[in-house]
Length: 143
Image (cartoon, rainbow, N blue to C red; front, side, top):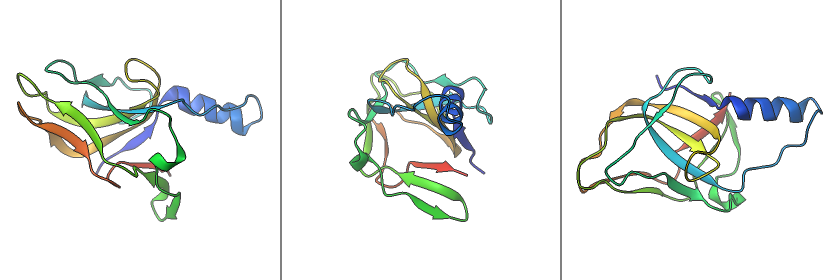
């Protein structure tokens, strides 16, 4: 079963906002990352892919509302999905290490981890191929 969560900085910001201690400012942009090591808790160590032309994929540089579906509530929680395809660059000259999960960051490099999740099984991108999330396939859940 896939797991998911929020980055610890996001947890802290939401707690401060909900408990009236600080305003919350949405990030200026959202970027998808792929992980070769993904923990099962928010405070774990995440290992992002590197090399062979890997770079984070832009979800929406302006973080506009149109980048995400309407909020949906069902038995799994409250969630949104990506409203457009999210495309990573082509792996070159070699393939990438198998990805076991993903992260959503507020910057195209470094930045703050907002949300993360694991894949049901590891996924490998070979040389000359690219990874992507089809419309509606990247689900961010608040359980």
